[in-house]
Image (cartoon, rainbow, N blue to C red):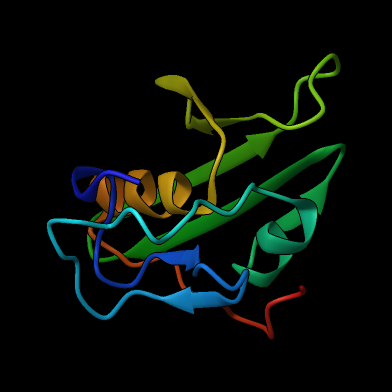
Length: 117
């Protein structure tokens, strides 16, 4: 994986297929691999399932927003991330979801429950 796609706090897989959380990002991150987004990961991050979608709602200060993650009917691996009515983006990995969430909210997306492996 390229270092530019990673942040401290991202969950990735190490060379032994163990899930790790990055405590630093080095220039060469060739030894780590992305983790595909799954329903279990969404649940672990605190997303709630409602009417076929997973969503998380954030409130704090002047911000109040809902974020949705949905798997397109024809896709077996990709998810779309929606924020309010403003847009959507296709995501494939847990670190992409974490990075986008941070970019939009300034908040880290952290595991609320034990990670399902």
